[in-house]
Amino acid sequence: MPGSRDEIRWGNLLRGLYDDRETAWLMRRLDALVEDRRRSAPGANRRKAELTQRDVMLIVYPDQIVQAGSAPLSVLADFCLNRLAGVVSLVHILPFFPSSSDDGFAVTDYRRVDPALGSWDDIHRLAHKFQLMIDAVVNHASARGEWFQAFLRDEAPYRGFFLEQPDRPELARVVRPRTTPLLHSFPGSASSKIVWTTFSADQVDLNYRNPRLLLKMVELLLEYSAHGASFLRLDAVAYLWKEVGTACIHLPQTHRIVRLFRSVLESAAPGVKLVTETNVPQAENLSYFGDGNNEAHLVYNFPLPPLVLHTLHSGSPRALSRWIDGLPHPGGRSTFLNFLASHDGIGLNAVRDLLPPEDLDHLIRKTLEHGGRISDKRNSDGTVQPYELNINYLDAVSAPDGGEPLDLAVGRFLAAHGILLALAGIPAIYFHSLFGSRGWPDGVEQTGRNRTINRQKLERAELERGLSDKAGLRHRVFTGLQRLIRARMLSPAFDPYGRQQTVDVGSAVFALQRTQPGSGRRALCLQEVSGEPQTVNLDLEDCFGASGPAFAVVDLVTGKRFSARRDAAFPLGPYQTCWLVPLGGGMPPNLERASSA
Image (cartoon, rainbow, N blue to C red; front, top):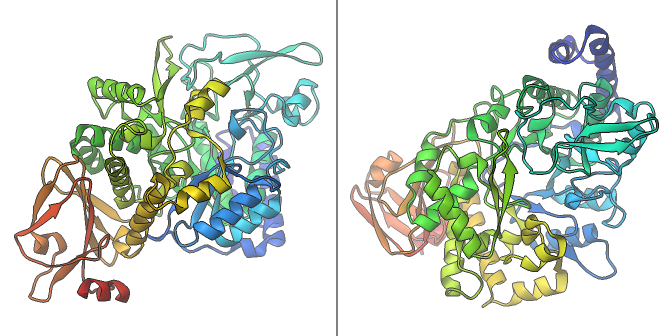
């Protein structure tokens, strides 16, 4: 049986959610779950190595690549093993369960791999080479799924699994991520049932007031970890608990549930990390770190995509630098999941208090000029405002296809990722970004959904041809990103848990100092953002806390060596990325040799 520490932790968390009888029942069931997990999958309980500068995540749909006659997950596994070993170490496969809508996020069966996509064997094959992140769609389930259909028939145990609201109270304060109705009516076995549908009529909110539902979700988390998940992404987790008369987002009960998930995983599968997905203003987003040790291991860094976009459109790093310097260190062994593009759009909620309205309006105008779309949300006062920019990130930072020289488009796109890869945390790169895709407006016309613009499925043969064309966009983007990723891997100064501080070197260069905890190893990252040549004057001895005739630095990106001086001048070309580290002190021997050549 688990020790008393588990029982005390779980009991303290559960008593804030349920009465004493329900708490006692749930604690017994959790004890049994953890013991069963320890017996059935002892190898999976080994603590995995901590994240390092060598870790980069790929975000990808299970059917992102298609090939006639092959299951998409098998094709994806082949492609990743052949193309991405040594480039990415983590793979986030977006939902691969049977689903009725929202490209996988309306799950009809949480325990099966969609047979049209492949099997658990394909997932296990990927997990053998890469650490995997699996989505736990914890806020809602499909209206066409087994759970909800059993709920409508009033069958145990599902009769209490979904959140009913039969009296239709005043719900004006509820925060909405969509403009669709919050409540929907469904015909039940005896009478109609009115239920919460925060995201869509096909995505019905789960009822965490029911301890059996909570137990079911814990079972699923442990099952996913047994299938090889190293990371569990808690989708839309901010909305888990609802209280009429409140905003129904970020409630204390929701944080208790996240802490319970983490506590149970630490007992049963201690290597597995929780990732919270909360596209909300920064202070609320950061609250999911808890005290740095008791909630999320990683939190999505939602302000980053629009701030980097603003930086490249304005040619100034000021707003980005100001935000980074005000960003608290998460503490403990927690850090950020940094990204620029994902399967969703570029959210605006997280920067409403970081950018003035005129800068937000400029991002919206640029998005429309570059062929993108805008999605809205409904506020609690009934007003509607832009919620996210729906556009491929390459299109967002550069003129539409053919609208500017290819060198310029690729350079600006790589500059955006030079910023991403320099920051503290784990960088996550969306498949379409890694392989230089443009947007897919035809998809929007086909589906009627703005987000489809960045969700095109690719024929493998066509993708491989594009990557083989050395003059083409895909090859140039992929090789450019490979170069940056491998440069990042060279220095422990890019420790995901490390410190970061911006350095003022002028109005057109983003400069960031990274420091590894414990060793004090440093890197100075310079990123030109205006598209114009710059000269950066640096006191390298001060930057690195070293001096002497033998002191020298090397640019990790190019391998070029510089003798260190107090008044060194560094020329930067348009959109150039330069990462400087001192030679010696743990520098990989191959880089030492290259820099001396």
